[in-house]
Length: 304
Image: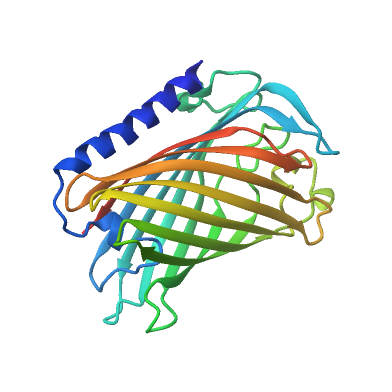
């Protein structure tokens, strides 16, 4: 199964990360210092290129009972570019781009990387752009910050086509806090998000020129709560486990969901500028047409 090959690749990256850690010195690396809670200094740049493949063959029904479906796979590339703009290192500004590709009707998980685009079993394209700002609100609490982004859908509205992305203007604010302990060998990181989906109700959309399925989240609040526990075999490598509970709360579109996800991952500092990250996540429960699939992620980050 192709998803097993992806899992093997991620496990291999973890092994390499731990193996290389034996040769590293004790200097603080970017993966230790620049957690999501830590902001950039003025003039610094942070560029992250993050790819994930979510694939599912199981989904809940309206009564949250699980049943088997033909494989569906969703690829997302998120590119984030930030720079420091304040002398106090407490304000960063940036821009986010998202490219997506989806396949349906039982296509193999890696076929999504062909980036086909039709109205029946595959969609792909640049879907959203988002101006973003990061702020450290309290001078004396350097490990607490928030990031606020406004996502603008830029893809074509194709009626009666398969799903590509949410047809919402999405304002999301993420709150970050981390704490290092155990002689800098352990770190707990927490994240709480507040995301508002703006847009017309599905029932109010014009069926003739609108994709109703892409409006399922309009008029809703997205609330994921996440926690990560990291261990640093060396200053330049880390492995982590994580869990997330997420809620899509109905604010007028007569639709809500929630799910629970667990996962693991690792990061490795390649050079003073570049680090890589690989992770795996599994949705273990959900309600109201929630997919119960797996996510395989690989990213590279540059800080300079």
